[in-house]
Amino acid sequence: MNFKRALSKEQTTCINGIFVLFVFLSHFGQYENMPWNWLLLGLGQLMVAPFLFYSGYGVMEQIQRRGIVYIDGMPRKRILKFYIHFCMALCIYLVLSFLLDKDYSLSRIIWSFTGLSSIGNSNWYVFAILAMYSIVYISFKQCKKHSISACVIFTILYIILMDIIKDQEWWYNIILCFPAGMILSKYKDRVCSIIQKPVFFIFMIFIALVLCLFSFSILAYEIISIAFCFLIVDLCAYKEIKNRVFHFLGQYVFEIYILQRISMNLFDRYLNDWIYLIVCIFSTLILAYNFKKLETKVDGFV
Image (cartoon, rainbow, N blue to C red):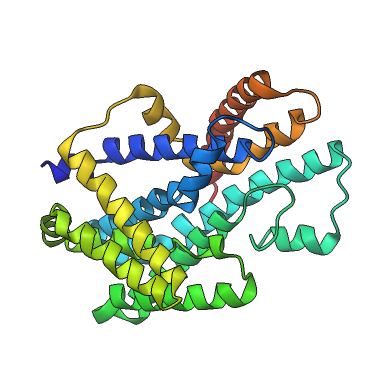
């Protein structure tokens, strides 16, 4: 099994491309009844888990390569840039809401710029990523000797806090995938030797079942989502997944995720079924491609 290949940039990009397509089709299913809706409904939040997992892995890889220089640069190069990209997309949604005569209150618009509310855009994932970047920065700056442990503890506190604030499980029920990715990066050889054994997944499922029996369903789902991500790593270590389309999509995960509802909302009243889907796919890809070019230009001023 080739874990180096499984965790390469090319392979993880391809996997992200697969799952961003799943996310797109899942969200499209909220507008139109499609034959795959039941399958993606069953997959649920697991289709987003690899994004968090690989984000945590990538961040930890950079920390190990660049050390304190990378940590010090996180507020500007990671958090601020990501937030600016989000705000740029929100401005498009504001224009769209005007075109579609959607009357959002001023307070809702303001809260949407925090990620805690929405004006038609997907938002919980953006808020989660910003929170995790902030947690990583604080943990590695203030808890240098136990930084990863601090990340796990702060993430658990995040789960508790979001349960109180939002009381909607999708805001936090896969968030532990992010520190799980960091742990994989930090202890790669040790973790890979464990996850390639079937008994590991049997143990994870057993733990999840026990947690469910004691009414800790959220933690059970966290365990399942982490096991799901490790299973993907195992599969990629066993067999390389190569596909030009998925690799292309994987380079535009954020752009597709944040912009996909623009075309869905814009053409909802005019089109239906497969024509609606095809138009949404192509318009989203065009938007994503040009939006990324705009992001690159804006990044030059940050």
